[in-house]
Length: 451
Image (tube, rainbow, N blue to C red; front, side):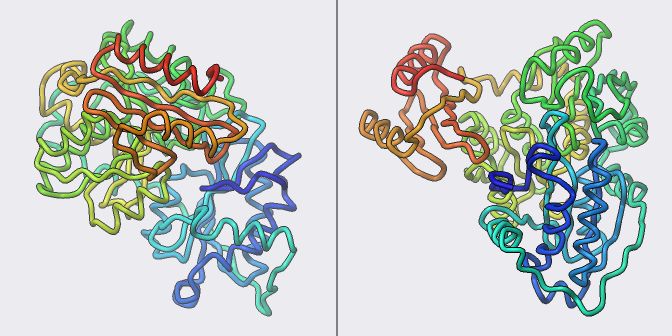
């Protein structure tokens, strides 16, 4: 059980770290992470799973634990994580649990949690409590067990997402390659066919062994097949989903990856046309171009630390219209402030049709700086190393919102400890490629060899 309770979810190797016994105990403990008033009002938890072969037995065990604690379960079966979030909000449930290891390789599995209104249950909001209860075996058995009902929410979810498509602009024909990576994005096929596009599907066979490539669109090597097919098919756009289809990555017509921070700016700008003056939340690893563009579009940019629980909470607090992360999560006010990759696709299509230029031209105004990917370093004394950085760059503008960020007029960097791995992660941006290379070499001298 050691190490599987992460900042945002439960995740580990199956069955060595995460198995049916642990899933059952997590189900028994989950009641304690929910708000008593919501349990009294609803008492129901939405449960669903991804396509991994061990997700079904884990889901069965989880439900046994939930029911034994007196919670009712709404089992929506095989579903994406955003469908689970939608179901929690749509059904006004007390909470939800998705059985998935997201983008991790086939041998992993996990559990993602939410409270009523699709609010996150995360490191700051209950996961340490779940870990403590499971470790102690400290559970309250209900005098009357809960019940299990089965619902199919696909039609309601599809109707919700498709309501954001602009029919007036849907007349522009677009050829779009979509890579489902053999993951849960394959279940979006029917919705994608209703977007008025010429769909070119890639790896739409559900297969939890991920036979073609890892279902992680953050790694450029996993986009290679998509990029090549976009160019070969003369497509207007490429889209890649991760394993549980809560993240999306975009590729332009030339086969070039579009940074998710820039996609955040573009979608935020699109939504600001409908809700001018609204807040748009972005994670602090994003290019400076994001905040600049949001302001240019009449919005209020809000910089936030990395992690869905922080982005969602700030978006809700500010009543913002939209939020996005470098990891490819996109959060919508009109989706219970939760992430929805399919809604991001809809808004990107709306934007592309309205601008009536190739995707590369849509992105071009945001290519203002030279920016690195996220670079990992194995560092034993993370706090000590960040203190060294603060001392070395003491003449810069420093903040500690998430790790350490140091800003200068012509460049900046962020170094933060990973929530899930033994790494310090570096992102930096400069005025041009030469400056970026120079600053990166300077930082690597302090941080060591990248992993």
